[in-house]
Length: 165
Figure 1 (cartoon, helix red, strand yellow):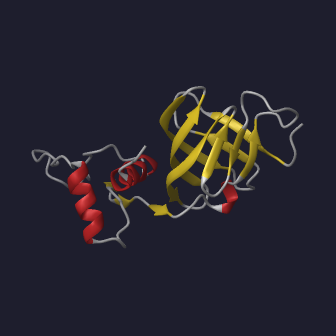
Figure 2: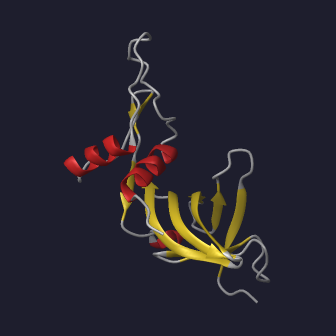
C-alpha cells in the first residue's frame, strides 16, 4: 500500500494545530472565502519550500506542529490501561512501528507539537485486513501517562509499563 505522505503530513499538522481546514484569522475580511487547498497544491507548497513548517493562522497564532522523521523517544515503549496483563488496551510504539492488541504496522508520518503531543499515520495490518490508522496522542509532563485524544468525545488513558505479564 502506498501513501501520499505530504498531504497526510499536512493534514495531521493541521489536526494537531487545532485549526479546521479553511479557517481564517480574525483579521481577515468577513466577506472573503478561503480558497480550498487541494492535495496537489499542498504537495507543491511543501516541495517548493521543504524547510517550511505547515501552520495555520488561528487567532493570529501559528500552529507549532512540525513533521519529524520518527516517533520521538518520549512516546516509545509499552503502554496499557493496566500494566498487569496484555489485554485490549495494549499499545507498543517504537520509532517506526505501532502495535495495538493484535494489529500492527509501520508508522509512515509523525507530526509533533511541542514536547508532549504527536499525531501519527500508520499502515496497519491484522485480523485479515489492511487500513490506514491516524492517532493523536498527548503525553503527561512526567512521561508516564499517554492520552489518546483522537476522538474529542472519547479520550483514552494508558500508563507506561516497564514489564507486562
